[in-house]
Image (cartoon, rainbow, N blue to C red; front, side):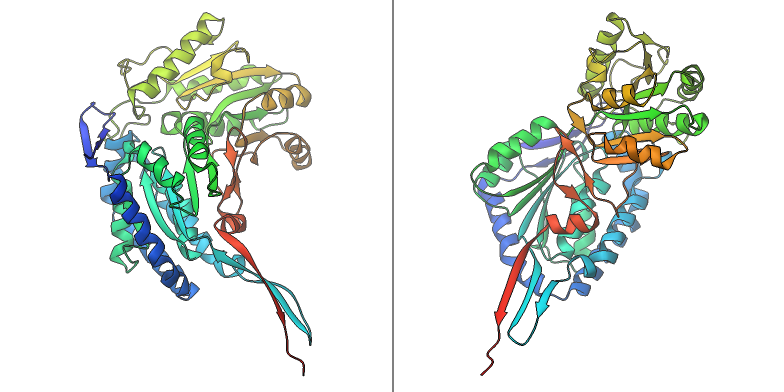
Length: 460
């Protein structure tokens, strides 16, 4: 008997969409179809695969007027921000542009006796398990390069954004990508684990919680299936004494609060040099107090609901615990805060690393701000975390940012910016944020395997 996945809209708690899950046998059939189609797909010329993928991307873009309100219904992002197609297209376009170079054989040498080189060959069937917070952009990070490299793909999307995978598959199929080459499926957690344990896939890319990543690793144990993981985050910002305070406030507070704080590389803790602390805090409070909370379908809304009541309750719990332990909450409760998905954005001071709000992933509209004396203290605090995705440094001195960045345990070092994924750079993390890397040339390396050729010539 199949189960049903239900997307509960954070706007009003209604069921926005529901889909039946595949049985294990049905899921195995889908995986078998993907495997059977892979060789023929990989045999197509690289440029043909690139063109089909980019046509699929454009077909998604043609749906944007429908996608934007659909996302608001599913996960609460205000329509005024226009969806994700800009980043979706940017990432796919970059991976398409570098494909020929990234996938080109490595020439080792050729003489009268031997020809030697290393090819990058597709892994086979790739499972992409995508999250709900940026459902199109996070999915395309792997879908585009995997298909371009000659893999077939099965996409399993989060229940909160149930319709995203359907739209992507429909768009790609409409331009000629074979249905068996790119499949969207609805699976239970147990069925997903059973498929991985049965060696149904050659690679699994998962973006989600630390607990979810552990479940993926347990399922894959002993199968030698490759796994790429982007898990939790607690990304810091550090504002040095020579920083542009206005720019730092605008970027870091937006990085903490945009999408109701539900960003993989959102800013969750900020360390400010003591000489700028008061000015930074005053400006930050003015920004947050100026937000308009409301229905994300309203064009005037600048901060919508969190995607799920349980996500909001975890943030409320972290704030409550911090205040009880001595933290100061500066933002009065918004009148629209309903105790459910609509949650007042909050700035905390007098916080310490003994508080969960400064250690556990919040993934919501709250940020703690601490005063520091200089680089040594800031570096120690930034590294005092189980996570490492990005860190945002604010200074006018590039060399100083590089020196500080070299000492931070993180996947990406930003200077004078935050909360952005450059597709030319490897998107990666360390510690409990996970392992592997997407996008850039390295993203192609993680979706292919090296195959060496050592060819001895007949010289007689």
